[in-house]
Image (tube, rainbow, N blue to C red; front, side, top):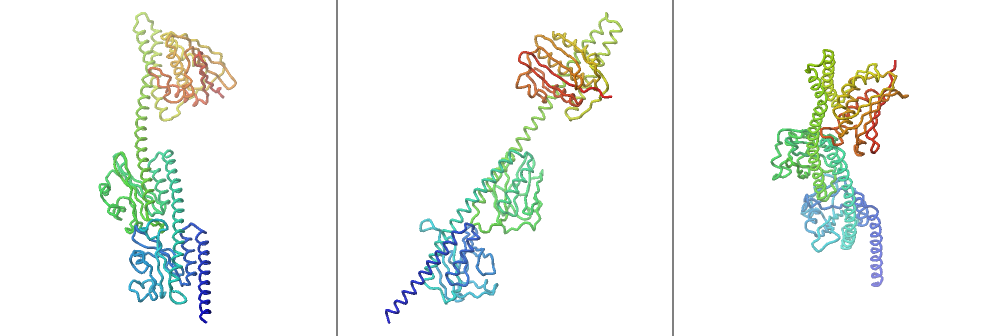
Length: 573
């Protein structure tokens, strides 16, 4: 009889062990099937509830930053998320003390809180609650979470159940730790992608509000926050920008110092970012913000002073702590600091460029106006000569009048060029008319510079041109050529007919155009090193030729000077 009883006990014990081994294998497969925490928690609860022959199970994770335990999964329970302060209730007590509790009757234990039962209509009887420890570390390793199993179907939980749950808890701890590592690695990759994109944006977007919109919107999406906002000094103003989860973005500059600006160094986030401050300074509706939401704050350092970047409210409640979010926010704040500094630097450089452009423009006007002024001086001296005849004086007066008109045209052309205006008045004309208008002035310029002038005209076609503007083209190119031939040389200006219209060729015997300049010769402010030149003259030449629907090109063979070729369309009746 005694032997039979022992055999039966051994058989039952063996069956129990087989059941436990089978259960452990099954939960092991379940835990290795996913690394996503939500799915993992659901699998854990399902398997543990069945193995423990219980009515329901809950896994609480410890959130030490908030001083809470929480669970998004309570199998068969109506409550989908549970949050309890550490120390409150059975699970809170275990999370604080690290003890295992096996309670046959929950209502006989003073630590049990029946509030959930009253709210859901559920009746808790027996409870087995056990801490889960971090899988690696010394004897002071922290508690990772709490496993709570309710209502053993066949009575109360036994010592064997405790051993089984302890075994399962070890596997659960390893699986949760692996899930966290996987999640952290995934987050790091996402952060790297985010910061890489911010670097790309910094080099491609120059407008500060537009850049902030991209940065704040991406940060809000990455953190799953309700609000992300920033404020910092920008020059002698303050910039305030905010991005909301509903897609609203707002950026404003204010001359008044925000009320919270002086408090940033010493105040806590909650003292700075109150609903009233947000409503008053950022224009965020009060209902968009809850004072109970988590607030993260990072300083934004700019050349003009200190500001801040804040993220308010987070949608991912499974986060155990916010250290990663803090680090990310610090990195984003550094990007915003760089954006503000780059914006300030670009504004400074742009201002310098504008002043430089104005100076160059004025230099060009002064430079180009000297020639007609010298011409006027020369002919005035000739008119004062007693030997000149009345006819010669009339001719000189006409030339002086033309030169004065050229100066007026120059001023108008420079203004039109700076504004991008087109102002030609084309009329029927010919190459002979152009040469006639240019001959006297060109002869005087070349004689003074010891340059031999050759004028040729083999064109018989009519052209539709603005004579004033085309004379300006010839003078600009000719003056550049004469100035380049410091010790004298020759300048040849030739008109002939081609299939596309009339070709104007201006060639000189000077040193030519340096290869580094040749490619950009028609760009504004490009010069080959002349003492007073700025290169704007050839930019105006190109603009005038293109306004006439013509083409212009330049060649500079080594040792052969420069050759400008202009094709002007034939006049169409």
